[in-house]
Length: 107
Image (cartoon, rainbow, N blue to C red; front, side):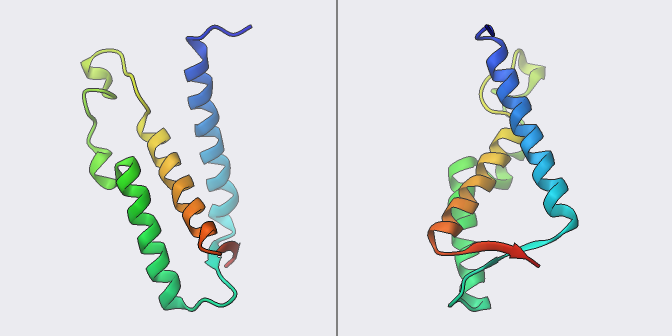
């Protein structure tokens, strides 16, 4: 049985592995959002809205500066890491686009 202290480390490792796997799979074979009845203007607008919602929820580019809560120079870190926040932001963006009827297709 795992201790409670090792669970956050395993969760963080899982998120980093998932991110690395996604980048490896999608980095070589580009993908893009597609909606059967959508055009490029609608895609750009929906993507901008979804990106803004995800950034508002998880911090966006403004949170790239370490805070005392996650910067190990200020003691033991607590709260989500920057990698966790980026992963959550990416997942929120994807969920929003799917709710709007988009799917990822090979570029």
